[in-house]
Image (cartoon, rainbow, N blue to C red; front, side, top):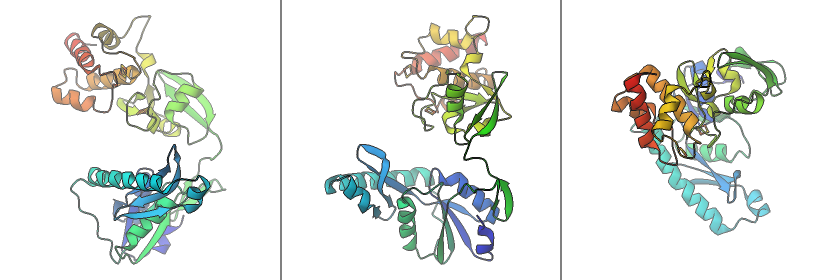
Length: 320
Ligand code: FES
Ligand code: FES
């Protein structure tokens, strides 16, 4: 990737395709000293096989359809229509969520770099480019990260190490013990814990950073283990729910969950316990506002929130 010389002296704007394109675009914008914004697109998933794309839509009612996929899978016009309308609606909601009240960056006559985290069918990138063209930029460049053959690639003029795509040695510090193995760089911390080290307290539910069932502590911070790569967690202290019980006795927070019916099916519980631990470590007597913020990243489908709040109150009074 040698973007810097291509855009020397140009008025550059970097646009990320969320979510995957954002961290990549952030690095590019930083390296080029260019402003960063987003370009929203939605994949049109094949009905019943949503991981497959039959096209994409972008703001401004832009649609790109992959006719080869539609023909091969005999997808009806009605289905294409239904999915397109649904995704355009989603797009309008997301636009508000991502941008809030911030105005869009001016695109006209600027050099725009569209960034995604990879290209599969290319439909998302094509939809984003078509939407962008309507705003008359001077030129559009599409950028995606590549895994190069050599161990070092050049990014914006600087050499950066390349990890993978094969397995690389990984060393994690979990609950005070060191765990070593070889993993592909794409493996999440959650998968490494559960599948490689048999530390299964953190649960895989949504696997996309939405439910909190996989919450562990990285240092003192609660994080979604499903949304962090194992290689990123190296050199940091990882604490999972397994560390809480000592000498056969439940941690006071775990006991408080039992005493106050803070769990039902229990699937969210390890994540909630870790989120509560992080909250109480930081705020031993949390205010209602601390509680709201501290637990806002965890969902309980059984609705045990009242019990969880009572458990926190019990520990806050007695101390952990
Ligand atoms: S499994 Fe990680 S947030 Fe849901
Ligand atoms: S106890 Fe069932 S999801 Fe929370």
